[in-house]
Every structure is written in C-alpha cells, then in structure tokens.
Length: 164
Image 1 (spheres, rainbow, N blue to C red):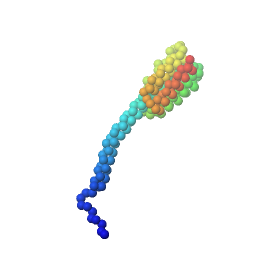
Image 2 (cartoon, rainbow, N blue to C red):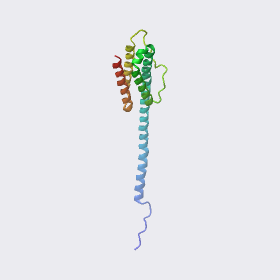
Image 3 (cartoon, one colour):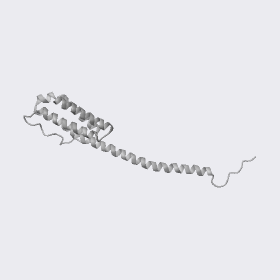
Image 4 (cartoon, one colour):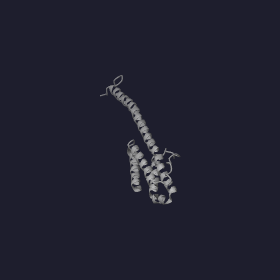
C-alpha cells in the first residue's frame, strides 16, 4: 500500500500553530509595554526615595556641625559629648552612603551656640530638631530608606536624652 498523497492547500494544523504563535508574539509585545511602564514607575519611586534621603543629609550635617560648634565654644563640654559627636558622624556617613547623589551642603551649619548660654541645652535643641526631621521623612519612604531614617531618628532621640 502506498501512503495517501498530502492534501493540497494549507493544512489546518499549520494555521492553528501559526495563529497561536502570532497570539503569543502579540501578547509579548503588549505585556512588555506595561512591564516597561511598571519598571519606569519603580525607577521613579526609587529616585524619589533617594531624593528624600538626600534631603536629610544637610539635616544630619547640621547635627555634626552643632557638635563641632559646641566643642569650639567650650572644650570641656565638647570633650564630654565627643562620643555622641562620633555617633552623629557615623550616622551621617551611613546616610551619605544610602544617598550617593547627595552633595555636601555649605549651609548645613546651624547658627553658633549663644554666648554664655547653656551649650548642652542648645545642642539638645539642635539634635532634637534633626531627630524630628528624620522621623517625619521616615514616613515618606519605605524599605531600607525608612529603616535608616527611623534608626537615625531613634539614635538622635538617645542623644537628646543623654544631653538632658
């Protein structure tokens, strides 16, 4: 027996396979567009978080500058808060590492401590204001950025308690 000759024309299986392939190709094109849009939205959110972190760098720089100003105003007080000043600098370093686009601010130094005033109280006010700023910014970010800002705020609240 001989095999029957192949039917003339376009076989139905090829038509179905070709249309399924076309459907997958079209689905890939349309989902890629929405995937790209989602990726762009994610990139925008990541940049916004970096910007929020970068905005906190001058706040922390002001804390470090305040500790330095107290040390200049009264060496004994500066020495008594040296460990806290070191912690504030470490916090600033961590913040700068998390916000690489941040640049050092020349206006981050608060006005100097009042002459003849209570240096510890002035410093406590400066540190407390920075802690509040970090805590407020913390709710505007998520993930690691929120954890970092929350950690900075909590650490500075500890400084406020130590300066009391």
